[in-house]
Each structure stands twice: as C-alpha cells, then as structure tokens.
Length: 101
Image (cartoon, rainbow, N blue to C red; front, top):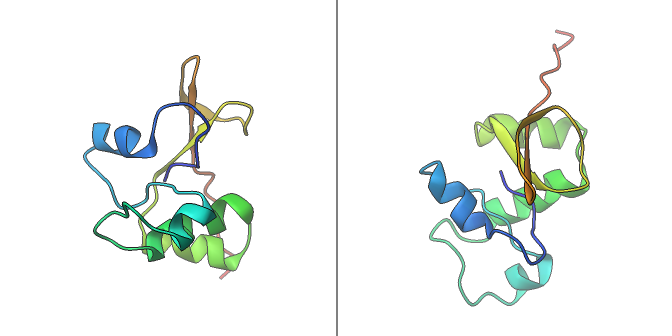
C-alpha cells in the first residue's frame, strides 16, 4: 500500500518494483475525475485513502486483511519502524496487534 506522493516517486513505480499494482494511491480529486485509473477501478484507491486518513480502527484492520497488506510505503516525515529508507521514501512494516478474541 503506497500513500499519495508529492513530487516524488509515483506509487505505480513503487508497487511495480514489487510486482504488485492494486493498492497504488491517488488523491481524492484524481479518483473523482479519473483519467488513468488502474484496471482494479476506484475501490482499492479509496481503500488506500481510508487507511491513510484513518490509520487505526476496525475498518482499517479489515482492509489490511482483505488486501493482504504486508507493507505500507509512506513518503518522508511519517511514522517510524522503518523497513527501508532512502532520501525520498520510507517503507514501514505494518504493526501487528494481537486480537482480543
């Protein structure tokens, strides 16, 4: 899952390096006025924005499970727990919380 970017590496490129393209990010305006959406359509794009805007909660946990999210790519000045980092990109491992079942 890749957060929206600002003048940096496009999410399609980041995900292509991992051979996966479904959970790339778009800004809300780009989804509402689509010119070049991925074949998956707007649903997964809205899911990415949901997670970025609501990083905690049951819906977010469900989206992680539904999309089998293993990594989240955030652009600089974001949370810690880095898995990979360079001057432009920070990749953090998703924090796994034990369920109280």
